[in-house]
Length: 179
Image 1 (cartoon, rainbow, N blue to C red):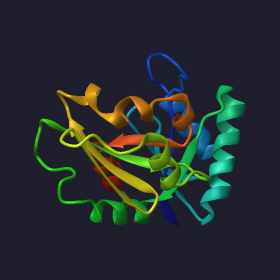
Image 2: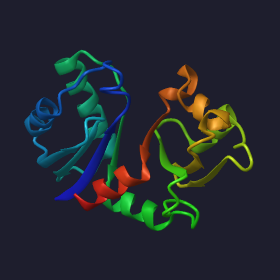
Image 3: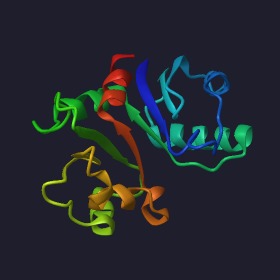
């Protein structure tokens, strides 16, 4: 069996798209996924499966969420092995101990590509934020005190780009890999 992570986009945010994690866990188990764990209330599900087709698993999970919770949300399934590779490939400036900087990992949800995200959002504002792509993720860091001045902050939440990505903090990604 192989370990996977399902990242659900936009659930349990400001009282919208409510999905209880205990119920979500049970639904994953009904799909025959094993060793199911959730992390935080923001849609991080870690599980094991003999299936090796992430597209097929994604479709199963999206259908289950639609049927069980009446929500049509984007889901990204990624192997834990791939997530470990991503973290090992992080740029030196990402996820350090500087508490004034906020580090995020942007996951691109297929069929979107990193190039789609770059072309819609544009360049980061120098001195306020940094980005670097790796495979179909983007490492993104910005100044906590100046986040509203960044180019990427408001645009990653916009309706046009929002369904093409899901974002997790560096700390969240590290914790998921440890589970």
